[in-house]
Length: 201
Image 1 (cartoon, rainbow, N blue to C red):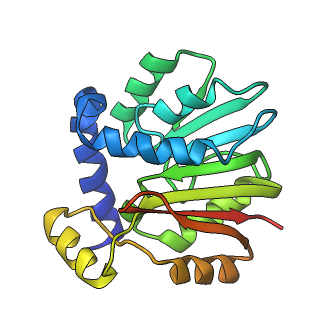
Image 2: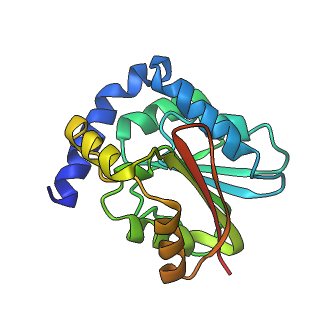
C-alpha cells in the first residue's frame, strides 16, 4: 500500500476517533509512556509534540517553567480537540511528520510518543525532526515495541491497515547514523515500549 493511501486511512481513522479518544483504553498506555518522556525534558526550553493528538503531553508539559509549547498532528479533528483542551496560548498546527511547517533550528526538544509506527517514511520524518531542532537539541521518540518484531509487525499489519512498522534499537542507530544524529539513550519503557533519545550535533 502506498504512503498516501496509508495517510488517508490513518487520519480518517483518527478524525473519527478524536471526540472519544481521551476516554479510550489506549490512552492509559499512552500516558504511561508520556510520563516517561516527560522526565527527559526540562524548564526553559521550546518543545514540539509531533503527532500531538488531543494535546495531553502538551498539557503535562505546561507545568514546566518558561517553556514554549507547540503541537502538530495530521488529523484535523485531533487538532480541534487539542485546541479546545489547551486554548490559544499553544501553537497547534495541522501538518505532517515530514513537513511540520516550522522554521529551521527552532526547538530544544522534538517529542513523538506512540505514533512513529504509523509514519510511512520514517527516514523523512526523522530528517524533519532534525531540521527543526536546535544544535544540541534532542529528539525523543517513544513507541510501540515488542519482541519478536518480525511476528509483531505481521500481526499488527493485519489488524491495522495504517500500521507501518515497529523498529528495533539497531534500526534507530542506523537512522541516526545516516541522518547525522547522536544516540544519547535507548531504553525500554514498560513491556511494550522503547524510547530513543537522539541529539543534533
